[in-house]
Amino acid sequence: MTAALELLEAESLAFIRDLIRIESVNTGVAETIGDGETRAARFVADRLAEVGLEPELVESKPGRGSVVARLAGSDPSRGALVVHAHLDVVPVEGQEWTTPPFGAEIHDGWLYGRGAVDMKNFAGTILAIARHFRREGIVPERDLIFAFFADEEAGGVWGARWLVENRPELFAGATEAISEVGGFSVPIEGDRRAYLVATGEKGVAWATLTTRGRPGHGSRPTADNSVVRLGRAVAAVGDHRFPIVRSRSLEGFLDRFGRERGVDLTDLDDDELDARVAELGVVAPLIGSGLRQTISPTVLSAGSKTNVIPAEASAALDVRMIPGSEGEISAALQGIVGDDVAVDWVSWIPPIESPADSPLLDVLADAIGAEDPDGVVVPYLLPASTDNKHLARLGIAGYGFVPLRVPQGFDVFAQFHTSDERIPVDALAFSARVTERILRRA
Image (tube, rainbow, N blue to C red):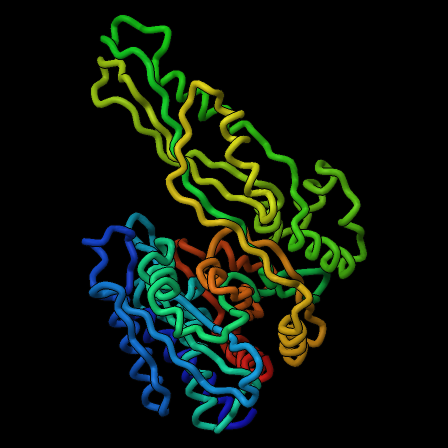
């Protein structure tokens, strides 16, 4: 390995640890957030400026800092690539950690800390790569826009969404983007690995169910108790199972992953496919969550006193929609709960799906193959949401790919938002090398 790559790996790990130690916690409640995101953004901007880049630090409001910097490529006629990470992390309160969550400690080859996976690992990596390119005089094939966003963990309102709405010129000419969630290895068979790339993301919406009835004293039950009516509606939602929707991203996964395993996953009915996906081991929960639309009741509200039957009861729902089927979910939900239950849609972010035949995916595969000759890149549908959805409003096709080669039984996705969040240090070195190849050739 060259001295330049050794420095890249060392800086990448150092920056990841430095960023973890900056407590940029996003509680989702404005008055409790503080200035952690801006402190992290200032750290990034200072490191970029040290090598002659001209980063722009933008605060959508005090303390909510994001950074954007552009590195010119050799072919200005090609669309720019946005490579982005978010600087905020979720809280740690109520979790039991065996190491300090913001200590960035390394134990037995594992880095522990909030953000080790989600996603200060990638923020530190792309920061180190930007510096590496400048130091070594490396000119990528297309313009690279390095973006470090605030507020992803609360929907990107004061981060990516704000920049897209208020500073779209920062992304001028961009056609594609790379960020979370994907790139981590999952077992195929034996020692072979697949590296998932998110070519689509489920949409996310929040809805509220409201039931009304006759209020009264708890000693005199009413036939139209709002709480009982709400309970029936919530139970109906919980019991409902939507049919499988074969999105392009799901079909791509079934075709490629099945071929690599030597089985046909494409021509199965819903029950057969559910059974086959359940057999996929560590990747089963992730793929299974992308098979169908889902509605999860999450918050119930009713009454204020035990001996008073309330006039109104409500439930909050988390709704996730498959690309191409989002138009059906509203009528479906009303049909599930019945006409006597009011359904109000609180927020709505549509799903996205990017072309799986983009030459960018060939670049991802080549970069993986240089480090893991038996590794294959496989598309899939992310059941969650990322800042790629906001960039999509500018016509930017987003892909989730943070390359990480991890031990066969290690579930990277399970590290998101959990206690003792951790990642192998050697996986971070792998990530730096592979991502450097991707950005050089993309």
